[in-house]
Length: 259
Length: 259
Image (cartoon, rainbow over all chains, first blue to last red; front, side, top):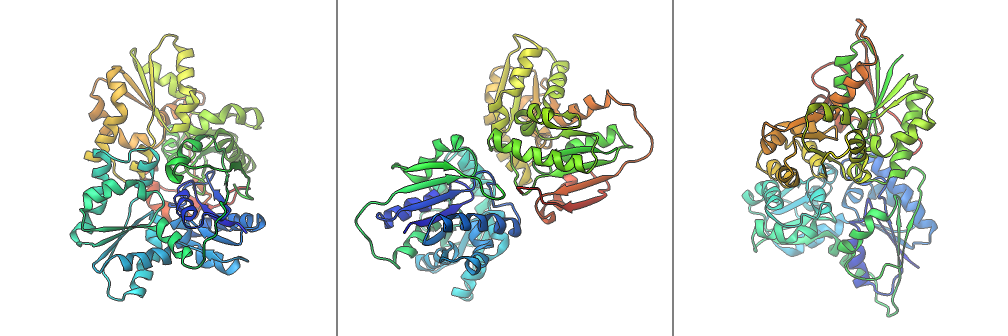
């Protein structure tokens, strides 16, 4: 039975990459909502409407569980999706929080989209898991455009990151949660700005690792089918930057009720 | 009879601002497709589908003509919209090109979204209007996020602009077309990078001016109704930055067939 995975765009392929390493035998169905990307500046209601359509699509395709490989949708929609869906729904918040607490003791920083940070989902889950923990959460809306523009290093990117992380450096964070699938591509710059003593938690890897612990591995190699709501053309070149080198079984354009 | 105006988001309010100055008596109906913003990285087919839904909505509301206050939709969809619509459709390309050619003699630069620049709409219209004209067109996808983040000045913004405009400075452009409604908010930085000898053409003002020349003015003051496809909440604070200080008659949430 295939695993369903979705994101607002193709960034969630970083989760697919981690899942394929963790579950090489599994078939994976991936939906990237490229016609309506990004979710990070949309309302909770709209993100929930779009996410529901994708969950319906993946259920109909036979997904036996669904991973929400988008921090914004995880923060805004997972509690509601989980109630309405017929299969288990896995968001990224719980696994990200667990990984952050395992990574170290000191103050924790969280960076994400405007909607993710404004939802307070990470802040509340961290506070609940470790009462009294100092958490500094900052919305960093320029980082996704920088990654999509391919400016992964260089002075401009370093200055943008430096400006966003200023309150975290002042608060002497020891762990930084990268609460958006695009951010791991900026690890080099983030590490240079924060210094080697701050540990980074990749929410994609944390999500895949949390699922792995629930399931044994099999040996046969699974396939990957990618479904996009906008024409695949302009995204093809960037698929490998998120997915890593490797075979994509197929990429298909789909139409959802409101895409 | 009201004038219909639409954009992918609220940036098109800069056109409304210019239209209200030019046609103070006109009632204006504005649609901002905030649930599906931005258009600049979507396919032509998707931008056309979304634009058609908005044109239908505005026609039903009684708009007697429709201004496409979005350079991306103007570049990708206006020729097709004009064929299917029951009222005149005004895009931004022709007026921007006219204003650019009136502004000066030397090479012309054009900055816009990835989709606007990739369409070649401005480049072809400029070449047709003045054969042999040197045109340097550059997609500048980070500028909209910078404006939306409110980083209108400062070192980061200046460096981003400097990097994008490098080929234009080398080509010694004399006119720069700001082919996106957000860019006029960056005029100070653009001017600093380009120097005072380069004239900037604001596509919003050029569009309003081209309509003005077709119509006399009346005296009574018109109203403005704004319709947004996502919850208005997070946009309200930014409406004035695009529209200028002034009364908004009403802001209403709407649902289009696919929003």
